Image 1 (cartoon, rainbow, N blue to C red):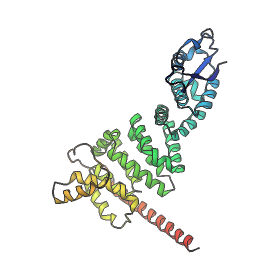
Image 2: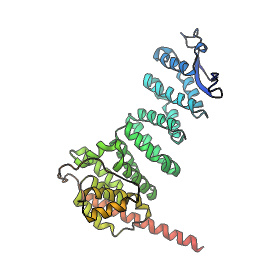
Image 3: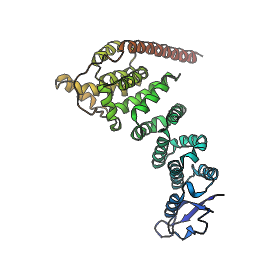
Image 4: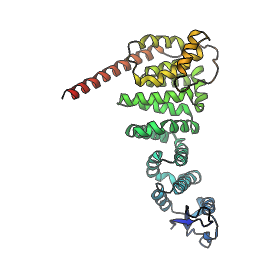
Length: 355
């Protein structure tokens, strides 16, 4: 049986005498019990040697390994958490069949690590989650769990949401991330949360370098896959009318954007839309000729954080593949749903204040 224990080694160089380094010491490998790892000078060297030795032929009982890793994955020491995540990633890469039966225990723990205060731990955790999410069922499961975490912990959404989404788009196909989240948001009953998520996703879509190719795809709409992606985003973005207008401008559907703009006067453009409105105005600025209107808008936008759109405008292409009639009907339906929700919320506030 594989025995594992957490071992602290004090650095006695005189420079970092108070620093405690965390390492994993594996003992009783069937063929390696005679090796004395304590002869190695650095804990990191021990861990590196052990990672190299851990293969399918090592004869290790996986249950013992997983138990110890999960026990220490939230250790107070940052290095320990990093080592645990690296071990899980190493196991997934080298012995995927053996670790798969334990994924129901591992996956929720990895999700909970997204709230880790250390950026290095968070990024490594996202890397591991992206490795697992290359398997389609885990991508959906991950998206469901991520949205639940954002919903239950608003501070995670506001403080780490952009970093998490951008890193996922760097590690995975951004179109898969956006499509999965958009579909799931359509099933979310909390309209205010959906609106917040769309505002964040739209801001990332318009500005992040990780989504440059996806922006090009939405501009071109060259095949059914990209058309389907646009329609999927449209139905979700309908919960944020200003963001939806930005999506139509980004995808160069200017005629439909004009239809939407003509409808916006009926909506209450409150402070909640301020960030999305700034994104749309930045997009409009890139389209205006350098006239007095351009200079006026440019000066006003200088008063807020700069938002830019990358890329040059390609040739105008036909948008006949997109069923805008159905999409516009969906947009009107969502707007009416939101209007009723806002009125009900105000009514409840008035009742509460009167009591």
